[in-house]
Length: 230
Image (tube, rainbow, N blue to C red; front, top):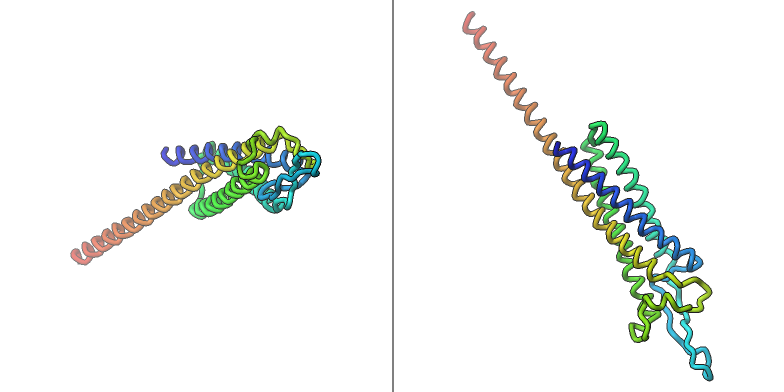
């Protein structure tokens, strides 16, 4: 019964990881489309006057962020999405059929979960740090009268659609950090399952050893009785 509860808890966590992964991937994909493939993470720029006579400022991008950053976090989000869906279906099947993982599979799941925890944490950090640098650039470190959220309502005249960038990355950050917490819980559950299987295996070995000792004692007693009768 305790093992069924553990499998059910793992199934719920994998489902939550799927949901949070979906929440992160969708706005990231939308932002990539809106920005024409350009990555706003770690982008550097500044506000400059268009000319001397007209005091109108325009945001100039000095260097766009590396596309590998956006590609990496999108890949991690999709990989987390697929892996959590597969694992949730597999555990649901085990729960219905009354099956369980072998010790090797449980240990393999622990390694995979630990790797996903690390990569999702790295992706979440990249998004948070990179997006803060973008906000610092378009608000000049907070000295502009408008906040970073307000800037999405301003046409930055960059030849792209910047009308929803703040909402997109706010949702993506929530999805990624929530997914990281969920995968952390999955890793803890995987460790508990490995420990449970190890204890079961250790108990089985102990019972086999005790059985062998009892059989050995019985055979010795039988031989001693035969010797006494002779």
